[in-house]
Length: 229
Image (cartoon, rainbow, N blue to C red; front, side, top):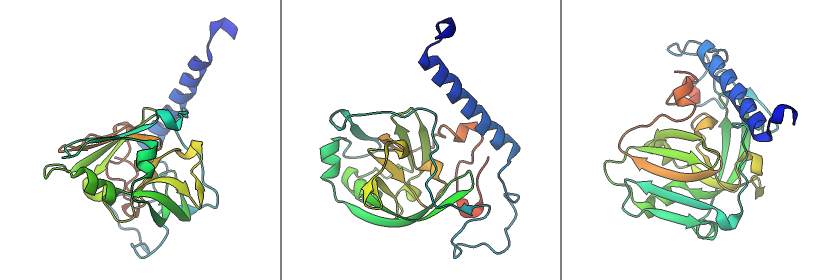
């Protein structure tokens, strides 16, 4: 390529442009439909579409510009931190865990919402029962194969409709959406649902993740429109 520029360098530049654009959006609170400390008339948890959201029919692809490609034989899920029974599961071991179906809507901070996805995978409550977090564990830190991180309270991670999903609507989740395994926490904006998850750490202290340190809200409740810090 001209000037000896490599493909890796170009990918890095694209990634940095994407990050800069999202940071600028967060600084300017460009997608915020109402002041974060003000009530939004007509919205409550009985409504299906959170404030500032629009319904879409197709599932948009959003990532950091890097799509990790892993063979199932090389893939591992590590669960560690403040747990009594840490684990490092292979793909076959994960698939041997109890499997559940959850129908849930998803809401992205970029203002789209997608209704009625039927997810299949391992409920986070079942995972929690296996690893047995210690009493001092209050937060969960998620790490992905593309270098992404995010954080959430253990209570959110343990909600009944949260799971580690490998399938959606009867088919394997596509690679660009987080295959082979991604987190799905429907009650929070979808950046909290890490794709390509590789490590789940239970911790006593919170540790803001990739977008949280770049201007996104730490809590990410779509019903409160917690988009930005």
